[in-house]
Image (cartoon, rainbow, N blue to C red):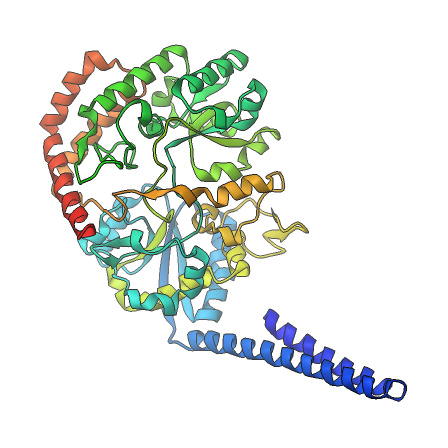
Length: 527
């Protein structure tokens, strides 16, 4: 669209140059003719170039929109607000239909609907859904469509360009086949290995984040904050502590799994050895630290009885620290509660910065919709085509749902979300709050530069053989291991009995199955 305007503008400029040359010819002679000729040539060349690019773009768009009309169904996780529903039924639907000849239905299901989605996939329903290959096993059960790698360059050129040269499709592969399209381009490494700490509180207490590198220094900050702000929660989201405190618990660098994973690998160790975490000295060492924290009042008991309160306290700027994510560096959410609040990152120990994937979430297509994979790819590419399409997906309709300010930032005119910004976030399309200086932005954008990929990258554990064992082990984790890990249940008095229960529930079977699958994967990766 903008190229068409450019072509028209250059054509008008060429005409103006011709008329100007004719009007001054008598006074200027040959010089006037030369200027007229040069201006005409430059205008014509620019016009032809813009027209040529526009024609090429129009031809591509026409080729896509001339495809047969197809009905597609896209499922996101989240809540469907009134404006969100209106947007996806009207403006978004109509734009996709006009540009791609796709009759798209967008639905939202609550977080935690995995069982329902799995049933829908197993029954042969046709749709696409948010997905992380390493976190789910639907692709191992034949529920998802395989995405032919030869289709990527043809159908996803803009998405590939947006994701950059360092972010590919290896993390969405299983046994060499692609089962999802990764979205976004942002830092992914170090998640759970860092503490996200209130930078304004550190400033007040006289600490710099780069100077807090040991457990002793971190506990000194906790004590100082507790003394200055006794009403403030010290730390929340404790599932990340086994990773952030690993330098004081175990050897090497621990792999980044889910909070209740029962196994881990040492990222700095050669080979495919899998360790049982809750039987290890590393777990014992963590419990000693958290028990000390609970006694000092750094860990609150309501994390077990009323976990939502900790989220409320963080959002109200009434908590010092939580699990660290790279996005914390550019987060301005706390400013609603406290205009002076900002977040920074603190790393304890010398673990390697691990990256186990190069995307946050992606979208997978049901096996029943295999025939429409290429059309789905066209849609995903369209969503990431340029800044205009990105803004449309995330912020809605310009002038109705959002405005672009003079400094390039976005002002939302409605409270509704459309496609979640965390899902779509891409550094090429980011707009940053003016309160963040360029040094912080550079730090964020280059966060992954010194990261290393995990040995688990691309590995997806098929839970089918140990479904029963996982259910029983998870129940034990929730009831006993979690409060023990958080310092709220005595380790020495309870660990033997808990391990005995876990053995009876099939812990050894689970560990052996994980070891078997990972060894096969590791051997394939290192052929």
